[in-house]
Length: 409
Image (tube, rainbow, N blue to C red; front, side):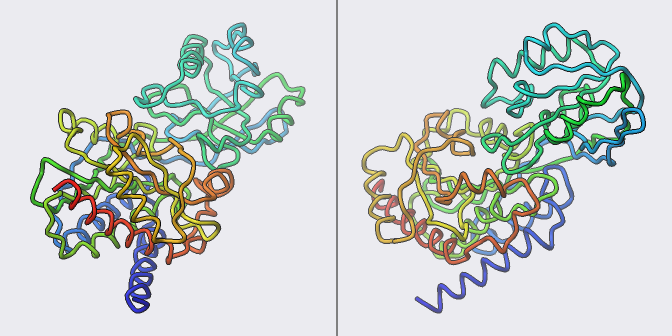
């Protein structure tokens, strides 16, 4: 057992190295993202899984640094992801709340947003799974006001934006008003500047591209499926080790453990592409191909943020029948480092829950610490990953597959 675990830990290191270091970026639409999905498909196929890669249209994006000036004073700002570029000078107006935005005259001006209205990242206009009415209203106001460009001063919003500081208020390829963002400190400096006019310049390009989800299947009964999924994409500018190379690595370890699997239950390993992408294209595809078939899924297991060097591994259950709960508890009880945790919904298990599927989410005990300080940043490096925890989760999932296969047969 020690030799097996050491072998699997070494394989985990190799997978992490490939996904986080040898591949430049896993952002949706990029060449690196396509390398990652190809690697997932090839690896699963090498362990006897039948793989299918289904493409979808998406956008890649590139930009140059922002130049922002008021009079002779320079300010540091960043281009909003997927924003269009803009160059010019115009009067500056500001709004710190929805009420102020309702009143401001922003036509042919640069609009500076700060304070209450920028406390949380706006969900993309057409995001299908979670889209609060007050976010939709802000978008309608912005499009009605028609500023030439938007500057937003933001702080931290780990629930929606991860550990990135500052975070982009707007990250949306369907929103066509150019936008940049800055820290709260820069925002206060900008507010105190006496110049009436701003000069803003940055180039950006939306690039039509393709991405894909990968589905790897093994089992005799296609009418009963246990899905194990992890999102394979990462935000631009981060290696994405814990968000979410570790989830992908765990699935690849599980694929090898199931090399000889011959059960009745179909095991479907899915690399979902888009959890960290404004359009959620991979999730949309997942829902579309499962329409009328979600009842086949006896359990969906989602891995996101597992393997952090601090704390234990946590699991949480959602809408699971008693016999599946009993099987899962029996399996996890034999692994000291895998413990029950609180329910959370900021990942792909929510897609299954919304469609009536029982689900398990597996993450790290220190999930909020990861979200607040590490995910979506350059700090999300393989050095923060405990390979042994990934091995443990993979071994537990193999047992879970075998136990549920017996339960439903």
